[in-house]
Length: 114
Image (cartoon, rainbow, N blue to C red; front, side, top):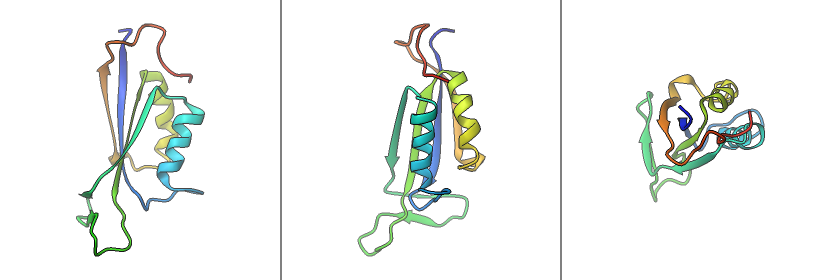
């Protein structure tokens, strides 16, 4: 199918750190510089919790805020699979969601560089 894409959603927190930068910065660098994916958006949540059960929320009484982040991106399945091989070293597999979708405007020539 010429207009088939994969959508990926990465769940992390502001305070998650990689080797040199935050995990968000490292993931964006991979997606932009190495894989040139079609589209990326980072969403900052106002509250959330994970498997630990600890609630992370924006609160006027807290000086140190560690809010949830979601990085969502999409591209052709080949580009997404290639990017995921690097992202799994940064983000636990349980925090990565993927699904196939159709992009109605994407023709046969679409997709980023692998």
